[in-house]
Image 1 (cartoon, one colour):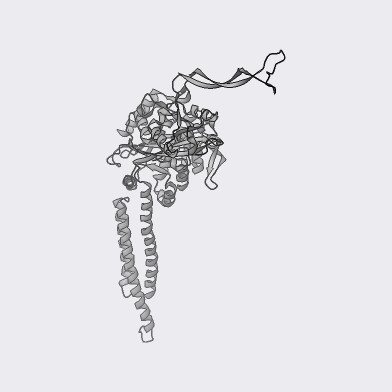
Image 2 (cartoon, helix red, strand yellow):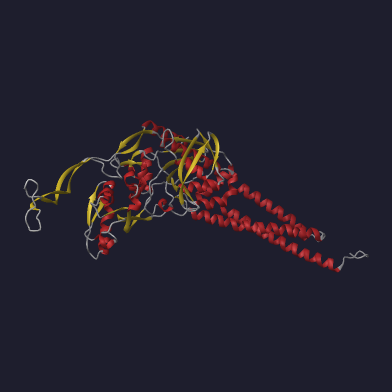
Length: 566
């Protein structure tokens, strides 16, 4: 300003520039604020009262800085501050505006529609050191063992595909009733190869007598069968008003492909029901022992361990549980061990109520090296915080526990409760990025995004605490046959055996063509191999199972009804 009170031309020019820039920045902030508000509204997750608060906050913030921008008498310094603050806030809102759709997109991709068509893999296995069977072309006239009653609907097509590879030559299938008999005769040379569903390979390898199956054999050829998939779930009409049941299946594989219902899937080592009443805010976690002896798919002629039911498809597993407890499952979730580790770590750990002190050691999968390694665990009694690896060890261990698998399924329920407690806290919003990365591709479910959004909106709206209880079915151990493994009844079988006998028709001759005599002057004879038919009695093969107590089943049904129909 000059001595006569006039504003210097350069200062006036600076003030004009600041005025113009501040107006432009204020307008830009208003536009970005509006776009953010529209994005938040479009999410359909945030309750209306919170979106209203956001709207009023944005209006007030923008109005305040707009006044600073448009009032001419505001000093250049204040307008400069307004420019800096508005620019910073606008940049921050722009980042948020970009991140929200990105997070939503990633989240929605995790809940893709479960497939209606899948692939079942039938593979030919031969011994790794077999000189006779090196490729599919060596299968002509080979003796190939098959599980006729387990894979009958896929064998005819498999034979045709293999025959086509052999230019019309056929193979010699030999029917077996037991998967272990199949492997045994492959080992002892009675069979050149075996043709079976790939899922059975893990069953064989889990048997102590065939623990090296995966490296003692190799896959010669694989036939892919297209199959139609179905599911036994019956979704509710309104997930925030109607009680519903989620069936949780967990397997002990680190391979995510084994979770996929569109391909061969492994056994279910974790079998749980999460019964939810969104109106009363009650959750019941029902744990079912993996070795429970049940009617597979509700068929009493197909009795087996519950863990084996998933090899016939997710729908068979669901139907088995529905039949066992007289319920109707509404949704399913299938996950594996790595899913649990990732989620717990993304949440920053979870708190659990551990009923007693434990210490033990287990193999764990090192995600950095890709190798298994041994890890020691110890858990103090009481309220403790555990990370992902500890949570995994906690739900896996059974050998050191007093009641074995019965205690393990209680531990699984404890960890699920800890997870539910953590994800229903408001603070989980700050971990959303890590959580999305953790669960991406690690689970399969038929719960859709709209239902998830509705539940999230409900929880944000009322911020209610949930009453979470658990119940574990129990029973006693016994020895029973397995429908999946075969050999369930005693039977007789004609079996051709090769024996070495004395060849009395052809005495041993010396170099002059004369019989070689023994010490008593009698001719000596060599041996020859002959085939003889023997009738053998094959006893059923028995496995350790859990026979559920009827009272335990009745109590579980009652507890489920109390949640579903309070």
